[in-house]
Image 1: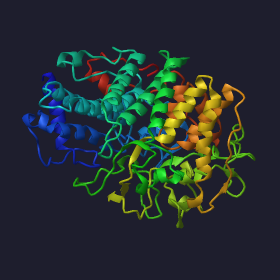
Image 2: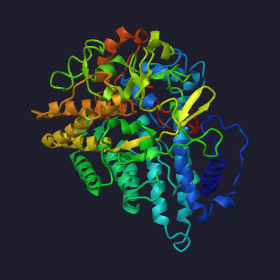
Image 3: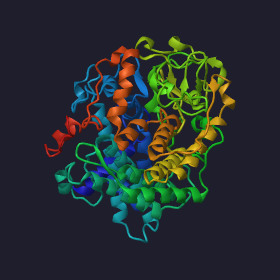
Image 4: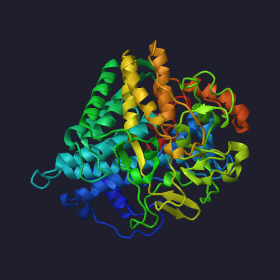
Length: 571
């Protein structure tokens, strides 16, 4: 199959299943099939662009673009939950680390390689982008006067898929629209260095930033500003240079300077801001507001059989309270304890985890009750919907009975849909919100030895948190204060990293932060020392440095490459 035929065939399949909704098995008859000639035309280029956007939202709990399994379970912020270790064993392996293997089809009872599934879905999204870019490349200016803008959207989306692959696997193969079939077949996952891969991702986001309008008329489309945000995020990750064993060996100051400049430009635009109330980030009526920099647009009743709702979270609702299934994504005691504050309202950095949170005696950062539902407290701000503790959990004796709330809505929300027992919502999945962007700037400033400039950024988020108690029904003892000043880089860095955990908790970022900073091993070891005593299922959990920072290259991909792909260290 030649280059264009391969890309178009993938796109044809993609367009024929664009309405498949949340179903993870594509075994139903397509409603329609498009021919190559219909797809490979400039008249249909916007449909190809939309099909690439759609693949972001065509995810599922087996291959989610909301990274709760790989970002939260591996970080000590959440337990897998469900009905015990065998209930989606691959997610149990993420919490235990050592069971992770290149061939996850060996995991009973599912016998499905979820690692390979995520890899494949990302490359399918990349293929959609590449096929459309090939059509654009072969069009004349008169046929497609908006060629650069359409290409910019596609390169923006392609870079998102590559970014996801990069933070999960580190060493990946780069395939773009210029490559012949022979070149694609000869491509390995080690043709480019770690830094060269980051360069390619940054180049795509930079092209998008230079060729997209600052504001899009259509909600959900990439803009110059959202591309600058992703570029800043890419450069921040790239700045922490790693050796072949994933040790951070240098922090690139030049890239950090560009992160600060990009965030300055985003701030100066005036297009984004913080919500007055932290809660509004996680309520459907406020989606696509000023704090949402780029989000997956979720929908129900959109003409597809199951809707394009929050299928990544379909397992995460509690067992009672009007939901019915399935009790996954259970916050850990360690995560909950991180919200405890001292007499000044600052984090209890060294003593936070000495005891389990006591609602009657421990003062906390208000963001706890926006993030975690727990026994005796209102769920999603409803004083008539009180969390029932063990009755709301599926296996409380194994995982406890907390419930992560950010990715869920009220069970009576008009945004709710169902497929069997699985509740889903039309609540957008925000991939970048403005608070995250501000924290990138604060992090870069600290690493540039300008921590006094980072202090007001961190305090701005804490002030917003302090003002976000109106919806919380006095469920806890709240106390949160500002930092006066930092006396050292180490002190500022510790405060920044803590702030990222409590501000962005359970949003899928934590593990990738730990790897970027080069502190995954020590952080997880410290977590396990205490958590093993609280949750006996973790007795055999063990994080191996220079291995578990990344997932293995799926064995199936090594086989399909003819053996030219190289496995990650330790696997």
